[in-house]
Image (cartoon, rainbow, N blue to C red; front, side, top):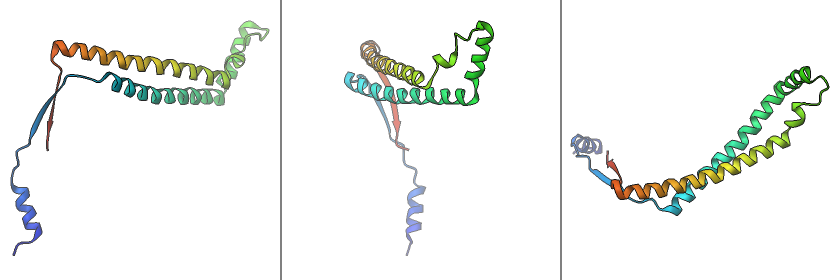
Length: 135
Protein backbone atom coordinates (compact mmCIF):
# COMPACT_ATOMS: atom_id res chain seq x y z
CA UNK A 1 0.00 0.00 0.00
CA UNK A 2 1.48 3.32 -0.97
CA UNK A 3 1.25 6.43 1.08
CA UNK A 4 0.19 9.90 0.04
CA UNK A 5 3.83 11.02 0.14
CA UNK A 6 4.77 8.30 -2.39
CA UNK A 7 2.00 9.40 -4.73
CA UNK A 8 3.12 13.04 -4.49
CA UNK A 9 6.73 12.04 -5.14
CA UNK A 10 5.63 10.17 -8.30
CA UNK A 11 3.67 13.17 -9.49
CA UNK A 12 6.57 15.55 -8.92
CA UNK A 13 9.03 13.31 -10.79
CA UNK A 14 7.09 13.73 -14.04
CA UNK A 15 8.29 16.65 -16.06
CA UNK A 16 5.43 18.79 -17.23
CA UNK A 17 6.03 21.01 -20.18
CA UNK A 18 5.60 24.68 -19.36
CA UNK A 19 2.75 26.19 -21.26
CA UNK A 20 3.68 29.42 -22.96
CA UNK A 21 1.25 32.10 -24.01
CA UNK A 22 2.10 35.13 -26.10
CA UNK A 23 -0.19 38.13 -26.07
CA UNK A 24 0.00 41.33 -28.03
CA UNK A 25 -1.00 44.61 -26.40
CA UNK A 26 -2.69 46.49 -29.21
CA UNK A 27 -4.88 49.02 -27.39
CA UNK A 28 -4.86 50.97 -24.15
CA UNK A 29 -8.25 52.27 -23.09
CA UNK A 30 -8.03 56.06 -22.86
CA UNK A 31 -10.25 56.51 -19.80
CA UNK A 32 -8.59 53.66 -17.94
CA UNK A 33 -5.22 55.29 -18.54
CA UNK A 34 -6.56 58.64 -17.33
CA UNK A 35 -8.01 57.08 -14.16
CA UNK A 36 -4.83 55.14 -13.43
CA UNK A 37 -2.60 58.16 -14.00
CA UNK A 38 -4.91 60.23 -11.78
CA UNK A 39 -4.55 57.70 -8.96
CA UNK A 40 -0.78 57.67 -9.38
CA UNK A 41 -0.78 61.47 -9.37
CA UNK A 42 -2.75 61.53 -6.10
CA UNK A 43 -0.13 59.27 -4.52
CA UNK A 44 2.67 61.50 -5.83
CA UNK A 45 0.85 64.60 -4.54
CA UNK A 46 0.54 63.15 -1.05
CA UNK A 47 4.23 62.23 -1.06
CA UNK A 48 5.10 65.75 -2.25
CA UNK A 49 3.18 67.49 0.54
CA UNK A 50 4.59 65.17 3.20
CA UNK A 51 8.14 65.61 1.87
CA UNK A 52 7.87 69.41 1.84
CA UNK A 53 6.55 69.47 5.40
CA UNK A 54 9.20 67.05 6.66
CA UNK A 55 12.01 68.98 4.99
CA UNK A 56 10.71 72.22 6.49
CA UNK A 57 10.47 70.67 9.95
CA UNK A 58 14.01 69.31 9.73
CA UNK A 59 15.40 72.63 8.47
CA UNK A 60 13.60 74.67 11.11
CA UNK A 61 14.48 72.30 13.96
CA UNK A 62 18.17 72.25 13.10
CA UNK A 63 18.26 76.04 13.10
CA UNK A 64 19.31 76.50 9.50
CA UNK A 65 16.71 79.21 8.94
CA UNK A 66 18.03 81.22 11.90
CA UNK A 67 21.59 80.85 10.59
CA UNK A 68 20.44 82.00 7.16
CA UNK A 69 18.78 85.03 8.82
CA UNK A 70 22.07 85.91 10.52
CA UNK A 71 23.93 85.48 7.24
CA UNK A 72 21.47 87.74 5.37
CA UNK A 73 21.57 90.29 8.20
CA UNK A 74 25.34 90.53 7.85
CA UNK A 75 24.83 91.72 4.27
CA UNK A 76 21.83 94.00 4.67
CA UNK A 77 22.64 95.35 8.13
CA UNK A 78 19.16 96.66 8.88
CA UNK A 79 17.41 93.27 9.00
CA UNK A 80 14.85 94.15 6.34
CA UNK A 81 15.35 90.84 4.54
CA UNK A 82 14.74 87.86 6.79
CA UNK A 83 14.27 84.34 5.54
CA UNK A 84 12.11 83.47 8.55
CA UNK A 85 9.54 86.06 7.40
CA UNK A 86 9.36 84.50 3.96
CA UNK A 87 9.58 80.81 4.89
CA UNK A 88 7.11 79.79 7.56
CA UNK A 89 4.95 76.70 8.02
CA UNK A 90 1.78 78.11 6.38
CA UNK A 91 3.75 79.32 3.36
CA UNK A 92 5.50 75.97 3.00
CA UNK A 93 2.19 74.14 3.27
CA UNK A 94 0.55 76.42 0.69
CA UNK A 95 3.48 76.12 -1.69
CA UNK A 96 3.51 72.33 -1.37
CA UNK A 97 -0.25 72.22 -2.05
CA UNK A 98 0.18 74.33 -5.19
CA UNK A 99 3.03 72.12 -6.41
CA UNK A 100 0.98 68.99 -5.65
CA UNK A 101 -2.05 70.28 -7.57
CA UNK A 102 0.07 71.26 -10.57
CA UNK A 103 1.76 67.87 -10.43
CA UNK A 104 -1.66 66.20 -10.27
CA UNK A 105 -2.80 67.94 -13.44
CA UNK A 106 0.46 67.35 -15.31
CA UNK A 107 0.71 63.63 -14.47
CA UNK A 108 -2.94 63.02 -15.37
CA UNK A 109 -2.60 64.77 -18.72
CA UNK A 110 0.71 63.03 -19.36
CA UNK A 111 -0.90 59.62 -18.79
CA UNK A 112 -3.66 60.46 -21.26
CA UNK A 113 -1.19 61.72 -23.84
CA UNK A 114 1.01 58.63 -23.50
CA UNK A 115 -2.03 56.36 -23.94
CA UNK A 116 -3.03 58.28 -27.07
CA UNK A 117 0.48 58.17 -28.50
CA UNK A 118 0.72 54.44 -27.79
CA UNK A 119 -2.62 53.79 -29.51
CA UNK A 120 -1.37 55.72 -32.55
CA UNK A 121 2.01 53.96 -32.57
CA UNK A 122 0.35 50.53 -32.39
CA UNK A 123 -1.15 51.11 -35.82
CA UNK A 124 2.38 51.29 -37.23
CA UNK A 125 4.28 48.81 -35.05
CA UNK A 126 1.60 46.21 -34.34
CA UNK A 127 1.76 46.40 -30.56
CA UNK A 128 3.86 45.14 -27.69
CA UNK A 129 4.42 41.37 -27.56
CA UNK A 130 4.25 39.96 -24.02
CA UNK A 131 5.02 36.33 -23.17
CA UNK A 132 3.73 34.37 -20.15
CA UNK A 133 4.69 30.91 -18.90
CA UNK A 134 2.96 28.63 -16.43
CA UNK A 135 5.92 27.67 -14.23
